[in-house]
Image 1 (cartoon, helix red, strand yellow):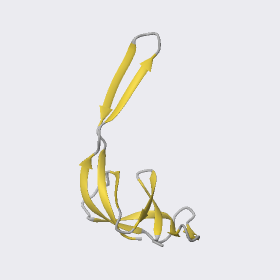
Image 2 (spheres, helix red, strand yellow; image 1 turned 30 degrees about the vertical axis):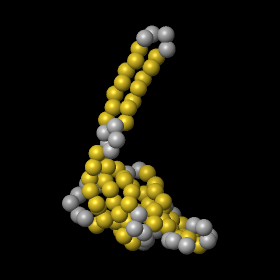
Image 3 (cartoon, helix red, strand yellow; image 1 turned 120 degrees about the vertical axis):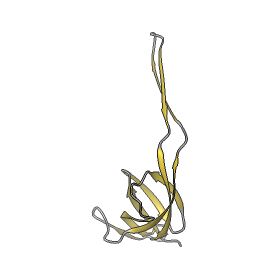
Length: 102
């Protein structure tokens, strides 16, 4: 089976494998290759898992593909019996990364 890893970036955790492209919160900096904190890695279906406390010494390498803006997120507030409705929204800044080494 494919080797997978659990990484942490932007306060969120993602299960990734090599050559996978994912969107994460905006990563600052000009470097094209980033190293992400690894919480666990191994063959999850086979049972061969390495778990850190809290992180492993090995880091996952990823390549920054592009910086984009995500889809609009709508925030709506409603209060019953008072005709109060409020709508806001924003588009989050995201970074598309490709996992190169697990």
